[in-house]
Length: 312
Image (cartoon, rainbow, N blue to C red; front, side, top):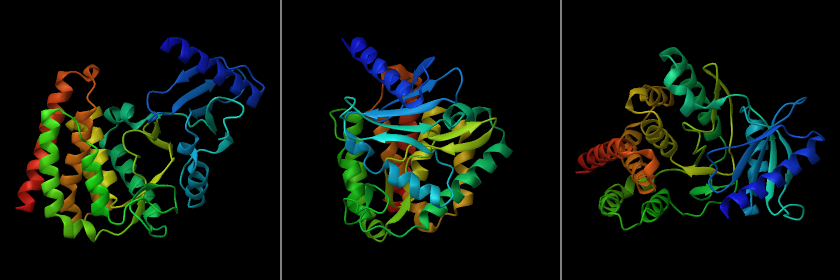
């Protein structure tokens, strides 16, 4: 049944691609990531490819067009939108059609990059985050459209929610939750003092498009985050360990160098990293293998111990 649904979805996407371009697509490639959105690259014989993002929940794309326009206005390398329809009147899904940025996610390229390439990229990404951080401060904390009011009144409350939604019956995760909640209480004063700085939360080892070791562009801007940009940096660290391994943590090292960490940033980073690590382990897929689970468990435990040692 699932294969039939997927085939029907792809037929509809191919139909959409033809209607928008007047070219029959030679192929549709479904992308691996998307957080419940289904994303396809449509390739053609006599024109450039296009990216078609679909979601049956149109609210997911409610802020995307505005976010991309605002980020483009401050000079970020983001894709142009060719078409958008959130009505679900023409297809059983909302869609956004964008130009294709040639290249691959950083997760597939970082292992092949030499140190000079990594340094250049880290500096570029930090400059981008600094530009976004110079946008007006938010009126709330957490994820939302650029300029909108986020859900939480403090960064501390936002973080408590991130810890709470880890909840599952896995004994390892239950142990992490108890320890993370204690840490959030110990760091409460520090966390409540965090300003609502805008940052791109998910330009990690994905959504950063690389070709020939060079940054080509950034993708996936359904939301931004308001709070501590170290939340992005800590997620990047976890993504590197998860996708590639500790061998390429030099990328995270240079991100820290170029961003310029304060003592408060350095204190909170292990806590943030442990939260992300716990989430990755909670979502463990057997296809990742035992080696991945062992690696991530050791890394997350080491971050927790570091955070606990600093807070004692």
